[in-house]
Image 1 (cartoon, rainbow, N blue to C red):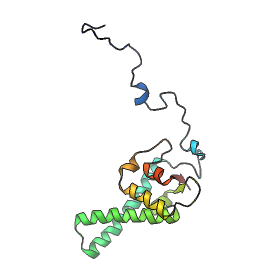
Image 2 (image 1 turned 30 degrees about the horizontal axis):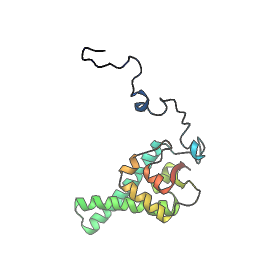
Image 3 (image 1 turned 90 degrees about the vertical axis):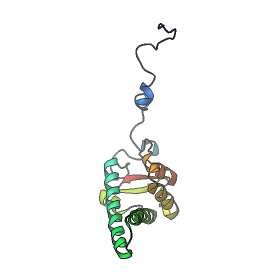
Image 4 (image 1 turned 30 degrees about the vertical axis):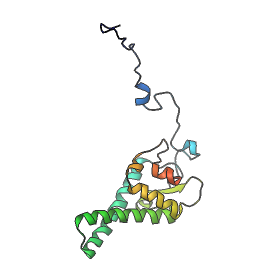
Amino acid sequence: MSSSGKERPAAGARWTQTWLGGARSAGADLGYPGERLGLPEQGGGAVAGYGRRLLALFIDWGLSLLVASFLARLFELSPPERSLTTLLVFGVQSWVLVGLLGITIGKRICGIRVARLDGRPVGPVWGLARAVLLVAVVPALIWDRDYRGLHDRAANTIVVNL
């Protein structure tokens, strides 16, 4: 007991050690990303890593910027309108290409694709749901242990290697 009459915590393990260090430090064996979904650890069909996803995002965003720049000159858009146009072009590109083909130009260049967990095509409805949440940004930043953002979880999709 301290002089204030309150007990001090015992020396040794801190109560924050398990939850701050994540599930692995708490002793949970999580395996590799995609294992619980029945996906292979490596190669085609395995969960795509962060690097290629980020590069694909930059490529798709760059292409959207080019299209928005063209539209800005054509329709004499102000800078705020051009920014909104870039976002809209990115969203429509993601919706149409992922919904119909399961792949965007950036994803194709990086060797990854979007796949539904049930094996069916993504389709325009789920592609739209995924694109809207992707454009909202925050849902795409919240990931689970299989590298699925909330936009992927909502559309029952996952990004995998080609």
